[in-house]
Each structure stands twice: as C-alpha cells, then as structure tokens.
Image (tube, rainbow, N blue to C red; front, side, top):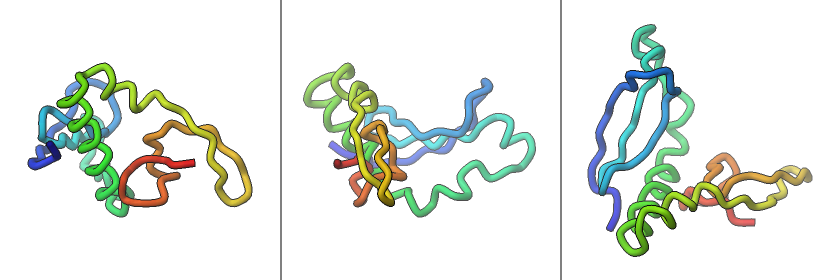
Length: 107
C-alpha cells in the first residue's frame, strides 16, 4: 500500500503542472504550456519530492482501506499553523508548511 511506480505525462488541457496518483503509481503531470515552451515545470519542487511521494502514498493507503471519498477529503482539511510568528490557515497538504517528510501540515 504505497507508491511503487512513477509516470511522467503532459496535460492536454490548460491545467498547471501537478502531482496525483492512480492506484500505486505517482503521476507527475507537466502543463501543456510548459511542454510547448520547453520550460521546466518542476524546477523548484525537487526539495519537496520526498514529502510529495509521502503525501500521495497516504492517499493510496487511505483509498485502499477506506475508499475514494475519505482519501480525497484529506486535501480539504484545513489547519491553523504558526510560521515565523504569523498564523496561517492552510490545507493539510500544503507542503510548504510541513515540518517533516510526511507531506502533511501538523499544527
């Protein structure tokens, strides 16, 4: 019950670059615009790849144990965190605020 495969793809619509999963495969989707212009969609994401893989693996595990709705609802949970003396309301999957490689924000 984890991510055990990776696939690279290009979006065919106007969506930005993003990460998702299908079964146990992590999908790394480049935007069509970036592909056409030769822009690297993921230049600044490399330091977060461990957290991204962990986050998607959590989705995979929850989906296999509890079904799709509980798994997808993980991204809708919001928490209040303090960062550099300021409080922010962010979704549980805002990796910029995660303090470890789980990919989850823990208040």
